[in-house]
Amino acid sequence: MARYFTDEHEWIDVEGDTATVGITDFAQGQLGDIVFVDVYAPISGEIMETNEALEDDPALVNTSPEEDGWFFKMTIGDKSQFDGLMDQAAYKSFCDGL
Image 1 (cartoon, rainbow, N blue to C red):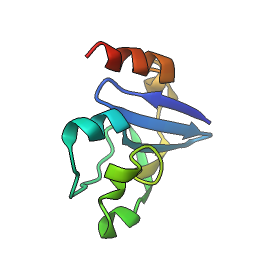
Image 2: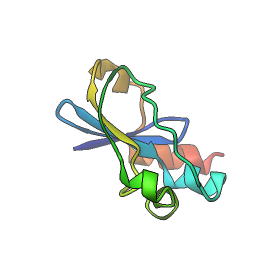
Image 3: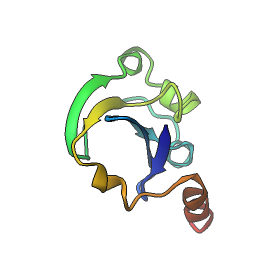
Image 4: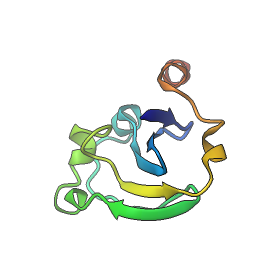
């Protein structure tokens, strides 16, 4: 599995043709306590599953943003869209520069 990061502080785990998407711990820290989550897919593809646990407990994004607090899983429409994204080291460097 590969994990990518966007400059808008989203993480994307890619496994085969499936991507799992959420926000980073850095983003959650900047936003403060998250009390509502509205799921949408900014990358081309089809949503396969949303994290229903967030409906009952949106605080999962606060306590586990990069694990249990994921937003949705989707099929990947175009893998070339991941080409410009950052790996863990590049994302850490990006955040250190903010």
